[in-house]
Amino acid sequence: QTLILVALLPLVWGGYRLLNSWLKQPQAVLVLGGDTRREDFAAQFAHQHPELPVWVSGGSNPEYTEGVFSDAGILPDRLHLDRAAVDTVTNFTTLADQLKDRGINSVYLITSDYHMGRARIIGEIVFGSRGIDIKPISVPSRQQPEPLIKSLRDGARAILWVATGYTGSTLSGRYPNR
Image 1 (cartoon, helix red, strand yellow):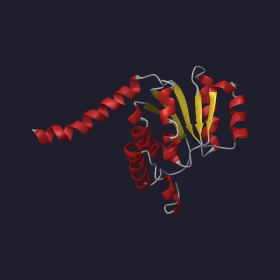
Image 2 (tube, helix red, strand yellow; image 1 turned 180 degrees about the vertical axis):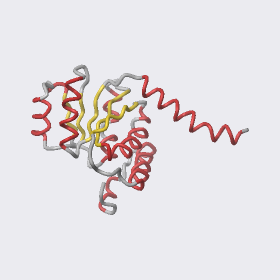
Image 3 (cartoon, helix red, strand yellow; image 1 turned 45 degrees about the horizontal axis):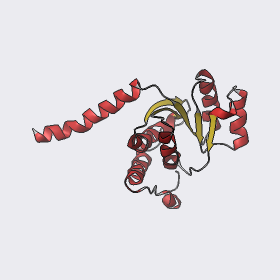
């Protein structure tokens, strides 16, 4: 019986997290930079959700980002550019506490469809550790999903950050293709 309970616990927890994330109304938009199509898509998405502040982590040069959001009618006070991230793990770790401190407990996560699997794993671990749920919004592309090994590696890095505050980002020279 104990073994069955232990085996069911992750399933129950996962189901709870999934249900909870769909019941909470997102309070912000997080865009993972790295592709101008994500920012273009996010600007239109933000236009359709005028009550939500938008964070762009990483991304294009600031002039492009500010221009595409301005062209979509997004006022500068809604747009937050975070250039501290150096990879997908740090897209989340550099913003988790900032969002939590603002009382944000649910975000729309915008990234490319091929990148969403890895981003969700990292986001569930990092943001989940701060009680922040994510609702994924994928930007269509023609690329194949990223290899599972990248998701496993970065999931481990996210767990490392939760446990120690260290992201392992300095290891990226050894393991390219962040």
